[in-house]
Amino acid sequence: MPSQSHPIDYRRASKPFELIHVDLKSFPVPSYHKYQHEILLYDDYSSYAWSISLRTKDNALQSTRQWFSYVETQYGAKVIKWKSDSGGELKSHAFTNMLKDKGIEIIPSAPHIHQRNGRAERIIRTLMDKSEAMRHDACIPQSWWEFSFEHAAHLHNRTPTRRLEWRTPYELLNGTKPDISHLRVFGCGAYVFLPPEVRKNKLSPKSELMIYLGVGAGNHNHKFMRLPNNVIFTAAQALFDESLFPKCSHEKKRQGQQSAPEPVEPVDIWTPVKRCRR
Image (cartoon, rainbow, N blue to C red; front, side, top):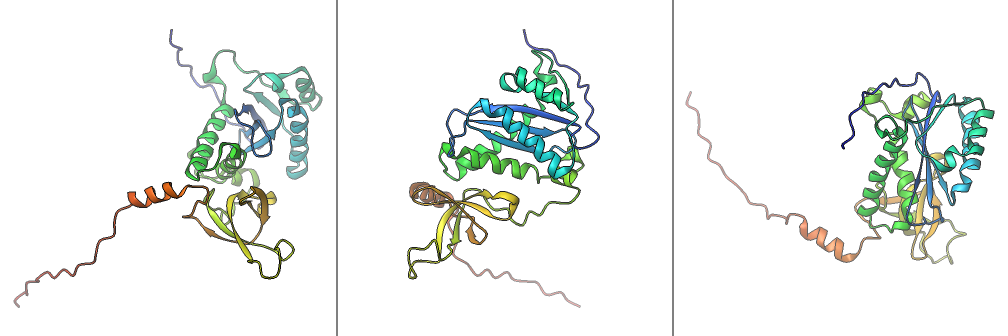
């Protein structure tokens, strides 16, 4: 029997951190740093999303405690209400006691009625779609999903939406419009400046082709994958080629070039113009 529709009895929070939705997503392939799970925290008021990478689900409690400390330090705020869309570690006895000790109200999810739950679950699905689209477009291996997922969340927080009256989650949370001048195409090639201590000798090139993997800590640096040994490299200076994807095979590049329309030789066209009699 198909499920019936349910009216949405939902009012948006009136300030940041008044209500946090949380969900946990597991991935079938371990990531570059051996992560296998992501906790997604979603602010109901601003729609801002944070992701926390976990190697095991047992780390969920400690990682969430650290996130609470981050919120209190960076925003001077405390979470008032908490709604978990998943079970397991996020609803364990220890996790529940931690929330109660902080005076946080726990909002239960309606059992077997996903239409009334899942705000965090929906944003995870949205971020997954964006993440996988960017990863496939750049021909990046599955184990690099942690970088594309993190970048998808970064873009989400800086994208205006109708729900926010065409403002961004970043703006509602921080009170200022985000600087997006640092954004580049995920997975594209970049010629990254190498400091002298990194070069082999004085005759070595001063830059090297790497793969762009998103912004670094604090949004002040860029994060790259250094080829061919696949080592993470952080730098502030780079020359980006957003039409080049180093991980894509030559065959795919050749097919992409063939699919593009062929250039047409310019032709001089002369059209007679009738003179108007005065």
